[in-house]
Length: 154
Image (cartoon, rainbow, N blue to C red):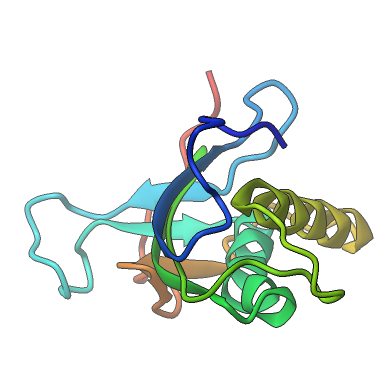
């Protein structure tokens, strides 16, 4: 994976804000937004994200796989959106792979994306039913009753 800046040390400790986008031509949606923008956070009808099966895989891989392979990388917070993902990663120590070799953050992200793709390809065909609801970076259960269906793609 190409680095954004060759002058920056992407193996160093610190916080990194990462944004990953879905390939609009080939990639499925990660879910859809629903809810009433006039409602406050925490209200059952407040705006929230309803994850697709692919979105659920992306979230599960984010929460479990990165730190399993790189214990020095913690997911601080994240937001899954219909066509992209925002993640704040906290690297607590020098990035090393399981063999003790230094790696850069791009290699960690490439491994995460590979894991997501592998799990998605292994899943049996599923209906486009929502998998989970996300609010503020954590799974929050099922969407409220009567939630509108996702709008058809243009």
